[in-house]
Image (cartoon, rainbow, N blue to C red; front, side):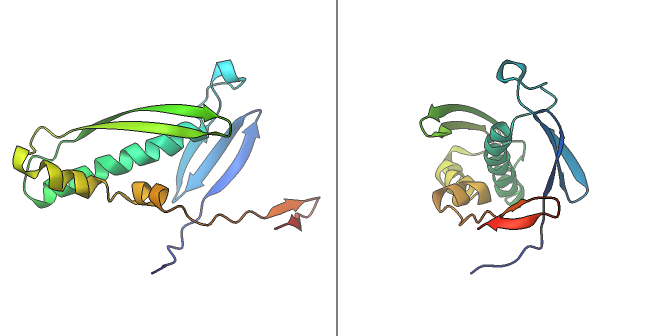
Length: 143
């Protein structure tokens, strides 16, 4: 079943490799690191992509614990690697610390965090449609 969330995100060029991302009244700045030619004014888009996955796992882990009345402190760490041809995130290793998690619920907890929305999206990628607007008035060029 598909639902419309009504969500939108706007990205605006700020200068050089810096962009601002606006959503729900929040602003995030993205940029490239100095060694990649940016000013390091914020994380890169790829770092935000991986961070979304890791944060989603943390949210789902905390929700699992909280719903069961368990101590709900969750810490998540990740390491990730890039593939250069084609350029993409090739591997992400995630480690979840849940000090209040009873050993008897580890498998159930793992299944719960694997249902993270971002994780599900990576396992069943969405269709992505890109429209290109060009010229003074943003005329549609390609679909």
